[in-house]
Amino acid sequence: MKITLTESEFVNRFLAIRPDNFSREGLRALFEYLEDAERDLGEETEFDPIGICCEWGEYDSATEACADFGHAEEDPEKALEWLRDQTQVVEAGESVLVLSF
Figure 1 (cartoon, rainbow, N blue to C red):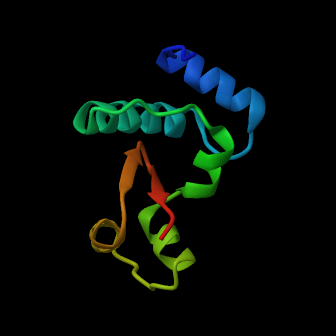
Figure 2 (figure 1 turned 180 degrees about the vertical axis):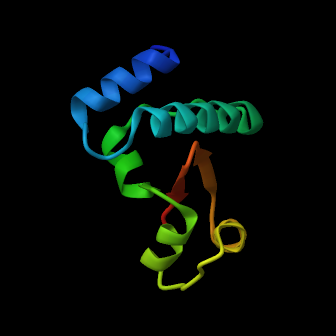
Figure 3 (figure 1 turned 45 degrees about the horizontal axis):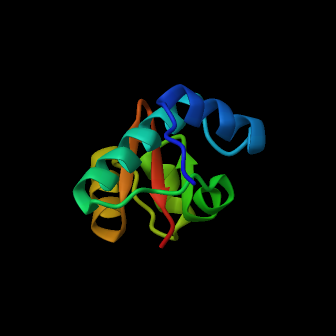
């Protein structure tokens, strides 16, 4: 049995379970990314906040994300480019969500 979640339901349910992992803006961007992936792959995604938290991280900037993965890059555009070469990246305003690699 499956139910379809709207963006606001996704965000609210996620924040009720894991309130400290992502910003609201980050969750909205991640919801859009996951919906696009569903359409592209033709497969439904299961709502699994714990799994998402294990796979994704939100950073204040691409340079911060690079540093966390052991790559020093001060230029934000080059940092974003490096991240995209390594993994999936979702931009959410000033922050970035990065699929763990």
